[in-house]
Length: 68
Image 1: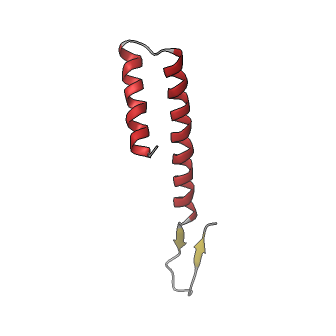
Image 2: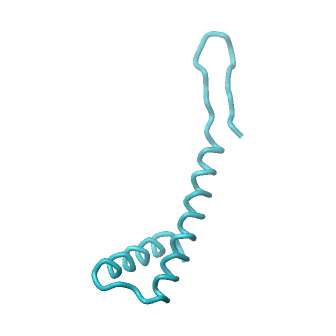
């Protein structure tokens, strides 16, 4: 399931929970979808952080720091 469909389904379940409540199966599904979303989010964030390069702009030469 791609992330957009995952978010749509989580939101559907959230709206239903607020309006009429969820069944036990729907509650379980919502928790599983939230876990998948968080795993995906953390993975993407880690990839972005791993690709950050800090460049110190001074006259002392090449002072690059790459975070890994």
